Image (tube, rainbow, N blue to C red; front, top):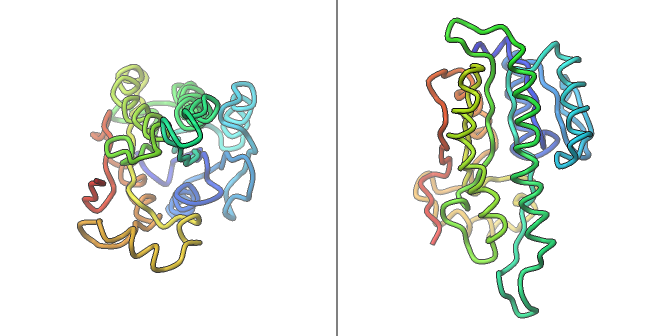
Length: 245
C-alpha cells in the first residue's frame, strides 16, 4: 500500500507509541485521525474523543473519521491500559473489576475498533494486489513472557496476538491484512518519568541494543507493515531480543 495514499485511524494516538505512529504517518504524507479519550492530536491530524469500549461512540467516531478523510485504509490500535495485580495478593484475590476492565479496554476495545474500521475498508477500491486495507494491533511481550502481577494484562495482550490469524482469514476476501506488534520495554511518557537509574535497570536485560525501545522504532515498523503486502496474520516481537524471566 502506498503510504502517501493512506487514510489512517490511530487509537491512543495522543501519546506514547500511538503519537509516534501518527507523527511518522503524517511525515510520510498520510492522512490521519486520532481516536483517544483525551489529549490533543499532533498538528495535521484529526481528532475524535472516544472510549474504545463504547460500541455506539466508537461507531460514530470511526464514521466521522472516514467522512473527514474520505475513507479508511489503515487502522493502528494503540489504545490500552497497563495494570498490575496478582491473582492472589496479600489483600485477597485479584479484583474481578480490575481483570474485566483490563480485558475490556485492551482486547475488546481493540476488536471493537477493528471490526468497525474493517467495514469502512471493505468499501475501498482494491489495488493491484486486491488490497483494501491494513489493521495493525498492539500486543506486548507480556503476551508471551508475562510477569508477576500481569495476569490480566498478559491475558489481554495474548488475546490480541491470537486475533491476528483468524481475523486475517476472516478479512481475506475483503482484501484486508491484519498484523500485530508485540513491543518490549519502550521509552513512553510513563517510563520517561522514572529516574535514570530505574530506566537503566530496565534496559539491562535487553540483549541488543541494550536500551529501552524508541517509540519511533515502533512507528517505523507500522510503516513497513503497511507498505509490505506479504505480511499478514502474524505477531512481530519488537523487543531487542528481550526474554523476561
